[in-house]
Length: 447
Image (cartoon, rainbow, N blue to C red; front, top):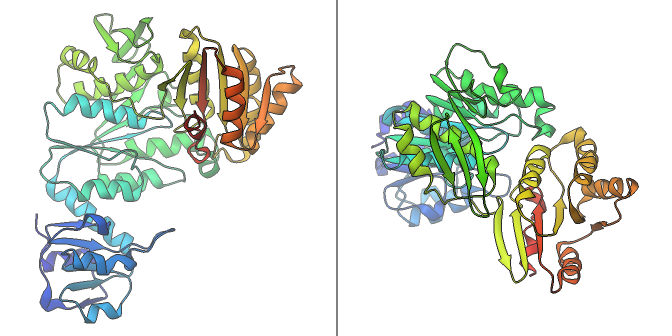
């Protein structure tokens, strides 16, 4: 794919073109100077913690002969490269991404939801990559820049899978209009990002804006989610869940230390290489989507049994001497925390919970942290150790209700030191969870 001068002029409508005589049509664009190679255009973006304009010289020296910039720099007089000056580099990036998406026209599948986006994406990619030339977003790059980077890397792939994340109203709509998905998957509607989305209704409206996008023809939804099951729009709807009113449903058969087993649609046996049975929702979403795009269900179920790419920091088992850590410290919210703790019942070891704050719950932060106390009192944790301002309220609430082994700490190191005294020569399961900003995995690093 080559971007001609006339194409870029129509797309970007630059305020000024500098060194037009040095224009050389780029085959690709990048927003990261570290990835620049010969004949790759560079888009300079001014961010919160960085300014891409500071890296224009580096991009040019690496071979970029076309620069898109908001700022007119003295450097431009010295280089033999063409510069398009624009009012807004982010808008310029969006126009280029949308042009690439439309011109190359792959099948685009978008995944959103309060929990489970990344695992669903990885499972779906695993199922589809055997049949299709496929591109997916890297890691959890699911915001405007992440989605843009994915499409900037698009070459001749037939299928693109993108996660769409959000923490403020309208973000999903923006990302949907950028990626123009034909299939939309929504995993769950739960109390996350309430700081920007206010309440569960706000979360619901934000998430379903994906399937309201005109490009979406087919929607894949969770039948067991109390909000999603209300959806009734004029699209092709496909449902997954644990009840027979779904197109694809699962019944739990049994769980072992390293796997969980299900019966799919009362017919097929599915084995997942994890003891944490709530991953069935990710599996069902991926299987149903694979079926919708034409793959054989039985073959997909057999292939998913070989899936091993359960991501780090998500219910990750780490053995250190006599301790089994369950590291679920990638993120946290009230629903995910409770589901994760329920799944620990299969382990007979004595248990300790290490909990950090749940972020972005807005005005309900105090409520969601303190109301966890009643739930935790019904579990069999020997100790509950907390870190963070809101988690301290949980500790206080637990003590008021008579749980004497709840302790609040000021650092990861303090928690680790306390744990080492408890677990000396004894076998324990230590469950670690908190929102990403709490970096609760650092507790494990001290062992």
